[in-house]
Image: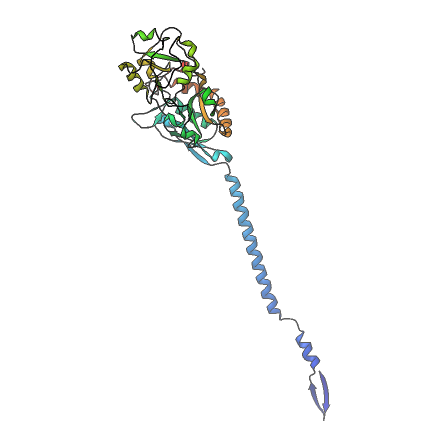
Length: 349
């Protein structure tokens, strides 16, 4: 910009350089203030989000390991009891199958329609001591272990197909060990023997097996394989072929067949319904079939289950609770109104 004096009058002339100077002036202070406020709001929002995330994380950590589970207590009429469980594998629901044979080990209560018996009590107690979330599953015995006349005994469809994690109340036998594995036993083995119609001459002539028919229960460890393995106890009539070994689903059916003369003997353990209704043969009638007494049977790949079950069972059996569960087998107010072994006969007391 230049000034000229013309006739005493001052005139101002703008040049290009002055316009250029104006174009390089900074933005107005008002615009700079708005940007600052926007940046401040964004910072505040970011801080709020970060604090909220931190609070959520701390709450999640404080709740870890407090999952509430429910284990059915069938011994008390099916009323469930609440137990606390830790996290990790305890969150898995372990299913344990139990059938029934109307013994004090396992039966269906007529009043409540629920499963009751020693096996239910022992399974619930082991799960409690293992701090595990378990469910008792009712199924027929043959879905755990299947034996049919003329067929090789084999794993049942239920356990083989992973319908449940284990079946409890099973004796370890040589043929079962080929397919499954077992927990430590929680009871003694029940001796096996032959039973005939009371007063029959077959009670004393049992070693002479030529032409004789024997009844066994499906799925039980007292089967034709065991009979043939002990063939040296008999003087004739062995091996026991499929046409001479008749299978029955229930002990009542087997007893009826013996009493009617359809078969000559029943082959069973020395406790329960058959032993009460029929007469054990005389002499030295024990025919050993089992490797060990009642335990829990599972697939060989299920090592995780076997590990925690054995540890929990060991802790349980060192307590008075195990003793009480055993004594309930003969207490008529609990399970003693059903046939079966006594606490001393069955348990490690």
